[in-house]
Length: 453
Image (cartoon, rainbow, N blue to C red; front, side):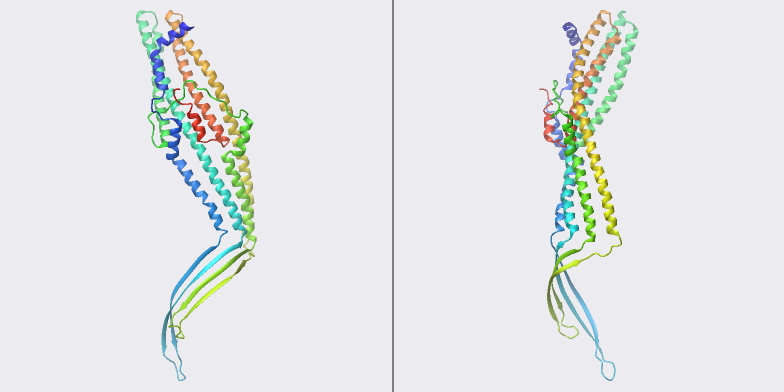
C-alpha cells in the first residue's frame, strides 16, 4: 500500500503543488475578523440599522416630554385707528381720527396632572426603545452571518475553481499519455477520445467556475466597499468542535427566550396591549395646572386720549371632560384589541420560527461534523484508489477511463470536504444567532481556525 501511495505522490507532484498553492492563503491575506470589522464600518444596511437605533431611542425623551410642563409665550403689536365724531345739538359734528398702538405679551405654563393617555404613551415609549434595540441586535447578528457567508462563499468558489483547474491539469497529463500510448500501439484511440472529452468538459467547467468566483467576490465587495487581494483560508488539519451545550432542546429554549425576533415581537405585544388602555383613556377627563402672566400696553392716542399699561397673572386648574366624540373612541378601542390579537399571534409565530431555526442549525452542525469525518476518510480512500488505478493502468490491468474516474473522485471529494467544513461553521454561527447569543467574540473564535498552523 505504501508503494502505491508513493507512486501516486511522485507522478502527481505538479498537480498537488498547484492545489496546495490554490488552497493556501498568501502572506498578508485578510482574515474573517478583519473583513467583519470593515463591514461594520462600511456596510450600508448596518449603517441604516445603526441610524434607526439612534432614531428609536428618541422615543423615550418624547414620551417623558408628555409628563413635563410646557411653557409658551405669545406677543403682539397692533396698530389701531378710530374715527370719532362729536355731535352737537344743531347737527353733525366733525370726524376726528385717533390712531394708537397696543402691545402685549403672554406667558403660559401648563403642567399635566392627570392625563392617562400621556402616562400610557410614556410606557409605550420604553417598549419602542426596546424594539429599536432588538432590531439593531438582529441587524448586528445578520451582519456577522452575511459576512461569514460571503467570506466562505469566496473560499468555496476558489476551492471549486482550484479543483477544476487541478483536474484539468491531471486530465491533460492523462490525455498526453494516452496519445503517446496510441502512437506506440499500447492503447486504442478510445482512450485518447475519452481523455479529450474529459479535458474539453473541464475547460467549460473552468469558465463557469471563474464566473462564479467573480460573482462571489463582488458580493463580498458589496459588504465592505472593496475587495481584498486574498483571504485567509481554514487550517489544513481543522478540528471542529460540537456546539455547547450539546443538547438540542437547550438551544431551542434559549431561542424562544432570547432570539431577537422574539424580543421584537414581545415588545410589539406590550405596545399593542397598552394601546388599548391609551385609547380607552379617551373617555376620561384631563386635569392640568395652568398659569399665565402677561403685559398689555395701550398707546396714548386712544379714544379717551390716555394710554395705560396692564399686568396680569393667573393660576388655576383646568378640567376637561369628554362628553361625546361620535363613537370614534370606542372604534379605536376595538381596533387596538384586534391589533393586540395580531401581536399575540405574531409573537407565537416568531417563537416557533426561532425554535425551528435552532433545531435546523443544531442538526446542521452535528450532521456536518459527521459528514466532515466521513469525507476525510473518503478522501484517503479515493487517493488510495487513484494510486491503484494509475499503477494498474501502467501494467495494463486498468484502462484510461478508470484513471480519469478516480482522479475526478479525488478532486470532487477534496471540494466536498472543504464545502462541508464551511457549511458546518456557518451552521454554528446560525445556531448562535437563532439563540440570540451571536457576537463578535464568536467571529474571533471562528477566525482562530484560519491560517496555516
